[in-house]
Image 1 (cartoon, rainbow, N blue to C red):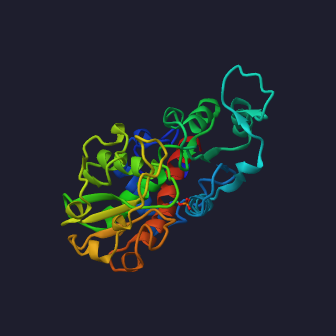
Image 2: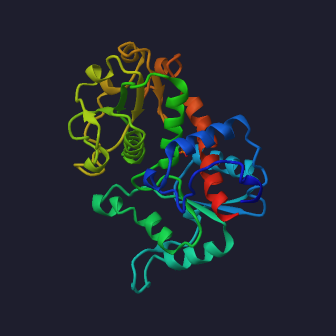
Length: 327
Ligand code: CP
């Protein structure tokens, strides 16, 4: 641990796939807070270490915040657009005569020789729930990668987003038992459930109960609902809320389908007036006046840019943690 021994982080992670990999959430949040106040304090820990980012899907925040976080720690970064690379095969023992040109076990083994930390983003296809919920791309990659792997948003989880969500809630309000509402909102495209799944998983792990409000047919997978409740009446759910997280997701039951786009579910200032002067969060990107009205996003309730900024500090905390194990 050399010069980092005076930094009292309790435990180190092998991978950062979900909240279940985190030995101590408060410890990680304290690290993020420290990174926020002094981003360059540990600017040598990543010296001569390479972070490889693999993006199978588009990104603005995750790509920039993770790169900046790595640079603050002295790492070098290579970001790959995987849509421009060889198509990977994931099945064992398959005869690769068709579209796939490289097996994940070969790709992961080779990347492990180059990289010190690998991070990967791969969205669901939203065609087959069983396939998506096996989270095959990142799970198979982790199986064959000998270096720490960070989840940049997989088919069903977005833990870096959730850690920033939690940091933003903790620093924005000081109510011991806040009323936290996760509200579905309309969207013209079928979107993954990853942000909402992870948000619920992390809130439960951090000791918070969430009221989830959505139209019938949009119930999230039961494994993420532990400790939380559903209210199908959005206005009733929003009443007296301290935290409002707005997010669209496609149906789990009618897997990957858009069942309705009723604009009445869009969150606007009038709906926020029902709350206890709640803070408003959204992970971004957001479709203005579809998911959230301008008068909500641009109101005093909104902490969406603080949340986006915290993506950088929380990513730095995660990288610091995994680097601390390997330096
Ligand atoms: N919130 C989030 O993950 O943003 P990007 O998709 O732009 O990375």
